[in-house]
Length: 96
Image 1: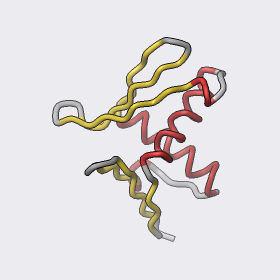
Image 2: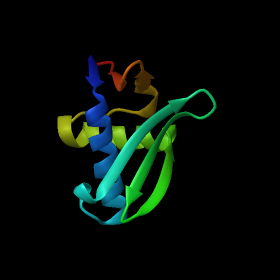
Image 3: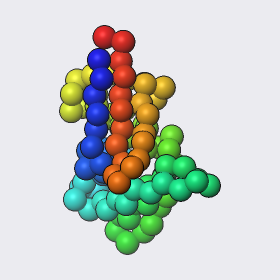
């Protein structure tokens, strides 16, 4: 099975994940997704005026939880591949 998450869904996944971790509302979280050759996939997150950077592993953790919560499907990091062209997306491959 294959599922593709849009850039908006990745942002939502990170917002929900960080809101849960920081005990704030998802609407209190701002996210900007980034990719560059040196650091790979990252996300800049702002919560209550404080900035934090997430590395790809943190982003994948948020996506795992999002797919489980929103789609009722358990996925693991090795099944998620982030990619970018004009926008970022996540391809999820499962053996089901």
